[in-house]
Image (cartoon, rainbow over all chains, first blue to last red; front, side):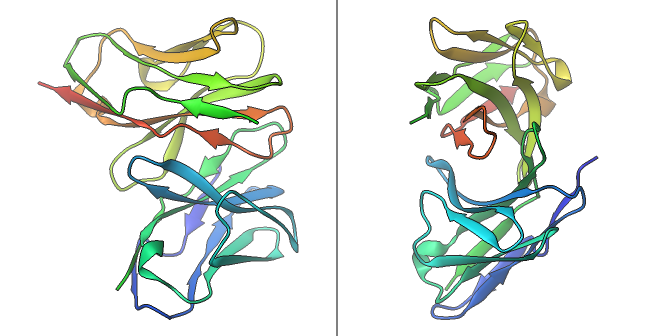
Length: 111
Length: 113
């Protein structure tokens, strides 16, 4: 089975902090994704990556950046956290001709 | 561009009753279709997928969905629900390139005893 592991289930940070959310997958997938999930809005794509050191903006990239130095790891960075970035963050990975597999999510609160 | 509409934000149903969760999509190209389930405080888990072939797709936990190209729908059904089916369900589409998924806003299924 595909395993997508997000480093934290719950995280509390302060406004202005730099925040790192880590995601690791164990299936050698090329594609990895970061979403945020908010009530009534479903999942919105922040960034995705289709190879090491490659990244593409999703629908809501503002205030975020990403890093993919190794194939198995995809990091989401909040450069200067703000309260409107309080949300559930979901990481997913995807192999060729396969659906996306998700981690358990990180519930991030910005105070 | 693709979009996905889940008209029902919440669906209450009694245990052992049938249920249908609706999903409609719009797309100018052929798409692949998926249903995911999210239990409380967990990530999304794939329920079923339609890639090609038979329009009736069976998934895990007794769920099935039917792809209707003329109506651009992919409704999810289960003939008899259990309390354990209480969760949020997301419909998703992607063009054949498999590099961007479009999700609906989700339907919360609440199964009552």
